[in-house]
Amino acid sequence: MSQPTFFPLKNSEEFQFDKNYYEEETFEKTSLQQLRLNDVEFFMCEFKGVVLTKTVFNSCRFEKCSFKNCDLSLTKINNSSFLDVTFESCKLIGIDWTKICQPLKVDFLNCKLNDSIFFNMDFRSTGIISCEVHNVDFEQANLSKANLNSSDFMNSTFANTNLSLADFTDAINYRINPNNNNIKQAKFSLPSELMIWKK
Image (cartoon, rainbow, N blue to C red; front, side, top):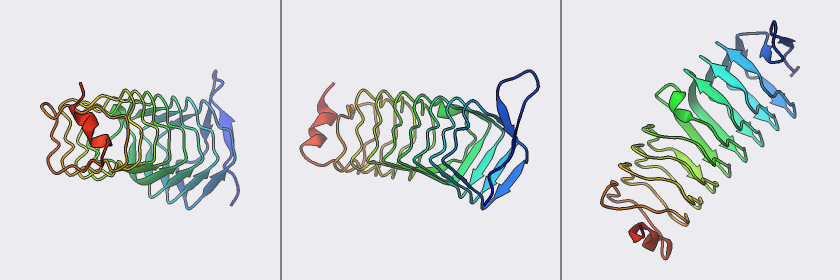
């Protein structure tokens, strides 16, 4: 499919999509840094090898979309929604996800999520699989039934976090205090599960 056309915003070096709705489109191997997207909807679209660093999403909607080998680091997501969206082998560093609309349904596979904020987010049943999750704030988040297999949670914060039925099988470097987190029926594999007792 053809690539979308972009045009410069007045008095700005940023760019913007020229349509408000895209369906079943593929955006591939394109550098679109520092965009400002306002009220744009993507339905069943694929993003492959796209660089969207420092992009601002204002009131945008992504539904049934996939991102693979993309870089969305330092993006700002304001009042936007992600429903049935998958990220695979993507860089999503330094993102404040608390600005996003709820409900949220996303899955991450083999992604870098370092230095991000998920404070008080509802991530029930989310997949964060084989990801690098360093210095991430999960305080007061709901990660019940989340699949967290094989991820690295070095220096990430869990406090008043709902981890009931979460699966930490083969995950490493997490520090979880069972006295201020809900870990009922959560799964931890040896020897990593011993980390929950370290402060």
